[in-house]
Image (cartoon, rainbow, N blue to C red; front, top):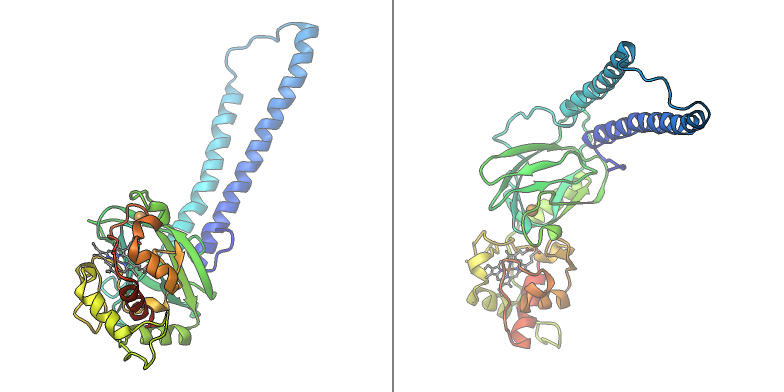
Length: 320
Ligand SMILES: [Cu+2]
């Protein structure tokens, strides 16, 4: 939150510092006066008895009503200004750059202009044009209420099943920025991470082009050695199992949007929104018993033979 990489995030961070400073001054003043009264009042009480008893003091009462009112106005005006600047009015709501759909407990990312559907890694280009509002994000939920928040990118925004929300993101620095679902949404809420990867435009474009390419399964290498796997066989294992009831892999008959799109799974750094690193050993562990990694998640485990598992993993990891 203190290291924003977007003008929206910076406005929020600046406002936070301003409120913190103002609050700090008031706190120091109150505690200072209180301490002073305690020390001097105690000394006087032992020497002079109780102080003179007074009922009401118009001047004081006006002062302690007016001072907080002035402070509240001093907070209210910049707050309204930042609400406007960090969340500008949305134009062209029917043409979002990214559609984000919250699911228990993962994120679906659709790029309608690029014809891409992916999951768990939100890629964004660096936006250099100072006049641009940013990337328009359209947020909705497939089930319960979630909340999308990447503190370095900007404001927090609720994600509802029955109401659509919009947000501009305007990242200005490359890097990986972490957020989390910010509205309790069930058992694995804490593991509904957001991984936002900001890239220079050219890098982003080539990522998008790669994601758009359908899955191609390479023929088995002549020598399928230990740990290598046969992707062609793995494809059949994928298509013949119930994986296809929940997952889609573009270029195959698997087209279900219930779970994360797995077309380019091999290009993701993690599995399960960041809970484990994406490597063949972890992917095998995930398929055998995902509930041991992310208890309560909406995917069953599979008792596959060593060979089947190896080939399935080879198939899924193949597409970068
Ligand atoms: Cu959530």
